[in-house]
Image (spheres, rainbow over the protein chains, first blue to last red):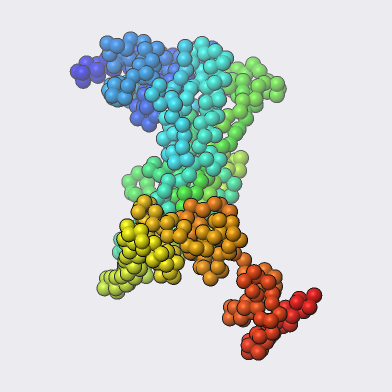
Length: 129
Length: 484
């Protein structure tokens, strides 16, 4: 996979997220997700991020982040969050490792650009109150 | 839409007593809640999954990994090792109640617990201890030198020296405090705890315009989380010149752990510790013992080792030789009586008791030979045939046990073989206070059936007088018993 292209896509994604209403929470996610992925694995991370949404309050930062992550990964077989979750839960070990490392690389690019492009945005603690 | 969060391949994995709880908490949550458009049923399931995960790792279910105890000792010895560059001070602190450290760590459970990465036991992280010491200095000590930098105070000199600044590292190192294991493979001191949020909507709307008053009619939401207890070995180290600073840090920790508490929910009473002087002394004595061993010259150490080794080897060789002999006898079945004699010999019993392993019990040859030998023993044969046979008391306890174990006899026989009460002690419990010689002497007054015989008792009179007072008294008591 071409590193530079991935970086380009990540940059675009971060700019997109910086314009969203939930940018504070998105910045937190950008910074924390690579660590969480390393710590808890891809499958758990994906489901965890989806569970962060509060559709009734109009907060969908988990979904927005995952959509951008998928865009950065740019894999032929994964076009939607549902597909990503399904793949992450169902594939065999070898493919899971490959998928995780792809996702991790994408998440790391998102973090790098978030640290540059979202530097002025104040972070928000994503933890439940 | 599913809100499954454990991978399909791992779905059937169940927690074991040896599971590393850190890994289990991080990766094995079965389901998560609040996926958009999740059904009520799915939400319930996700909630249950979370509670279950907490329950699974708590409440004596998980044992500490084998080897933790020696790892703990090893770590203590290496941290406390005295050298020209290193001075260490340590103490054991016992948790009064419970504590939570790492509640806010990022992870899918959201309310985690810090555990040691390799061993999966709860720890007090060095960073948390250092923070606590700094807070204790700021809040408790009156001297201005201990203030930390805030809006109203300037960084004090002592605080800067001990804890360091952006420019200069602190002079004291705070190490992670490991849990002190009370025994090998003890259960982990991790508990499931619960906090129930009442009036959730009110608190969620705080800061915005609150529309719902906290009227106590909202659903209470129970949230389970993990807490820990137990004793912890706290270490601080410095260079020998800064030994006083290390002592000061220890004192600050003692104050902080007692009055401020460490970790989360200290306002609710979590995280209080008290210094455990007894346990601290115990750790010091372990250290002293090691230092004594270190002081021994290598030659004297070698000597001790050689002696111990030679002793072990010689008795092991004897046991092995006996075993080989038995195996040879077994090959020639005409010699079975000799095998029986060998088995009954004292030598064999001693070897057996000392070296059960080297007797290679698993070896079918040896096992078969022993069984055969035992079955040929006339006493056992008689007993097994139900002919009122009695197993002689002279047989040692070891032999009786061995017989029961190997002969393949009935459980009842095994029991009788193991427990053959002494007629004297049975009928006259006061005999217990006598010397063994006196007991043996008076024991001769009983016949083979365990009955007291006047004839035999009368013969003993002269000999009993030579023993201490208790013996002759018992002799009279026995005489009286006969009269009755």
